[in-house]
Amino acid sequence: MDLGTKGSGRTPWSRAGDGRLTLKGGVREVLATAMLEALGVNTSKSLSLVETGEELQRGDEPSPTRSSVLVRLSHGHTRIGSLQRLSYLKEGGAAQAARRSLGAHLLPRVVGRGGQRAGGEVPGRGERGGGRNGANWIAAGFVHGVLNTDNINITGESFDYGPWRFLPTYDPAFTAAYFDQSGLYAFGRQPDTLAWNLTRLAEVLLPLGEHAQMEAALNRFWPAFQTSVWAAVLRRLGLASLGVEG
Image (cartoon, rainbow, N blue to C red; front, top):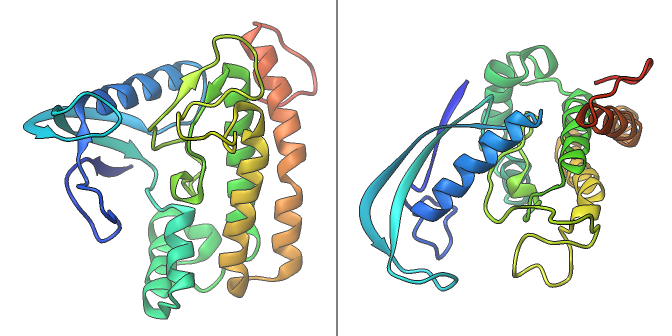
């Protein structure tokens, strides 16, 4: 398992933010991971939450507010957005280092220890993990809130819980983030958004594999999602169906 911190300070990717986590936000992530794991979602796990004593200024809640650092466990913290960034900036050396890291630590049988082969298997793994997680979110009535490529883990685990909600009543248009006024990440759009993100992953990895392999892997997303969502709903109802995979 990979240890990661949230709220430990600024990084080169923090933009104008301070890289800190409010205690309220940390508690919300602890609650999200505990509830989702109990509902059968493959999620990161919250290991510890430590209050730091700092006072933070935030525009969307009463300030100053208390600061914290969250330590979480996951099989990896490589995001689709991380690979997109390297590709966009044409950082060949860093991209090769990222592929070596994938090969050594995350997907050794897929990428290879030298990071030389990926084919369609990396998006294929993402397709299966993303399809199952999307199905489990739907069955649980969970709304992630911000499903951009920077919040999608290539290991297929659900993680990075900022704004999130559970549906009070069934509503495909329900959103979890106050700033999502267009409904981009609405509850009912989550499967489409996951599929869109996986397509972006395939674009980044295309130089490492064949187009046909990537296309075949992406085409497996919807069958995987449809099978998984029925299994997840039946599981929530305490029912079983022959021929439906969990």
